[in-house]
Amino acid sequence: MCKVIGELVEKLYKYNSLSKEELIYLIKGINDDNKELLIEAANRTRIEHYGNKVYMRGLIEFTNYCKRNCKYCGIRVANKNLDRYRLTKEEIIQCVKNGKTLGYSTYVLQGGEDSYFDDEKMVEIIKAIKSMYPQDAVTLSIGERSYESYKKMYEAGADRYLLRHETASRKLYERLHPDGDYDNRVRCLWNLKEIGYQVGAGFMVGLPGQTTEDLVEDLLFIKKLEPHMCGIGPFIPHKDTPYRLEKHGRLDDVIIMLAITRLLLPNVLLPATTALGSISDKGREKGIKAGANVVMPNLSPINVRDKYSLYNNKICTGDEAAECRRCIENRINNIGFDIDLGRGDNLNWTRG
Image 1 (cartoon, helix red, strand yellow):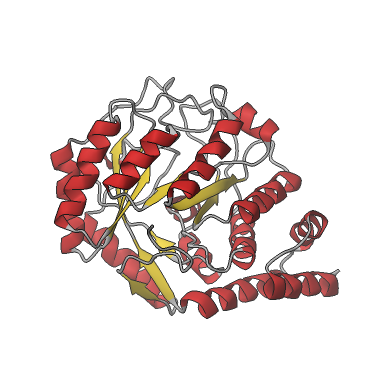
Image 2 (cartoon, rainbow, N blue to C red; image 1 turned 60 degrees about the vertical axis):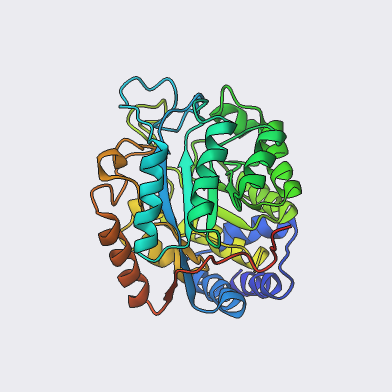
């Protein structure tokens, strides 16, 4: 089997593609003896396309209100134990200014699906950021909206949009999202690409009931979509959700998915997520060594950090923005990679 796995890794490295059956065989055949073959090929691919740079984005979690009821998420509307908050426009702008002082040139505005932040408010916030720092990138991660809404925010100056598809298995998606619409989720991603955003999709690893075949569906979906970014992290249970007693996803499984994704999409921007660092002290470092090249330190005010509670035991909720930046930079430098505070656009994207 080891020889076959090596041949599949080499084929994936050379052609950036495998069949469904080959991907299933590869994932099931990865073990401690051959895992480094995959990781080394992914790292080699990242170096060939992006060098040893790791791009740093400033994350602003500006609202934990959400109208959705996803079974795994701590900010689901049914969670009555959560202390809800919304940052004001002025507070968001101050977070951006703090980030600029620290050298950032990309700001990620992330929140639940909060109807309070309608098109008018979001356009106002985007324009305010762009009027101060027109060359910097604004990334949004605020869920499913209409084509018209996405277009208004793009025209206001937003550059990127993160919308993880969570799982490409319709059956699993519908089980996890009782009020969700799988077809609309996918439609939103294609709409974002059509409008001109740098688009981020992504999925969780280790979801309750998830199979190897489900993960392969995720890989085939992102190969077809060709997102500019792809967020992959472990499922981590939250104490106030129906999945509170489930086990979190395994670090090794996430690393394998990151490495395969890098090989499928050599130009993709691939984060080493906070969730990865939350299940293992060296999780983000291992992700970077397996092909990830983005980190997102938190710029949110400390007094709201622990309220943006997607899962249990989230790290870095008590760190000042400057402390968070220094910590991550030191960790990345210590494993032989360099921080890049530029925009770090996907190699295939230019704004229309």
